[in-house]
Image (cartoon, rainbow, N blue to C red; front, side, top):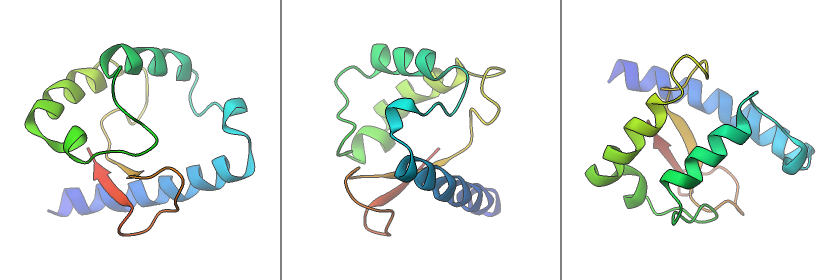
Amino acid sequence: PRVELAWAMKAHQHAQVYFNLISSVDPKFLNLTKVDDQIYSEFRKTFGDLKIDVLDPEELKSEPAKEKWRPFCLRFEGVVEDFNYGTLLRLDSRKDYTEENTIFGQ
């Protein structure tokens, strides 16, 4: 529980920074890592049917989903610094980070 709480706190800090970035810069011109294009390409190969504008928590947290997410994340070990950290995701991308609209993924 303490490790998960620490991850959640770090994820909250990252979420604030990233939300400020995407709110002030057109996201199509924003790169968060040097390998954004590679990550997105691999993401679409692995999760081609996943809706990303409005997320279904079951598609992120179910056991079958975790079986796909783990290998996907491991591809970026040594490439992305915090490749295995948890992150806060907005369930509906049109809305702000609120308790009802946020899920912690790890």
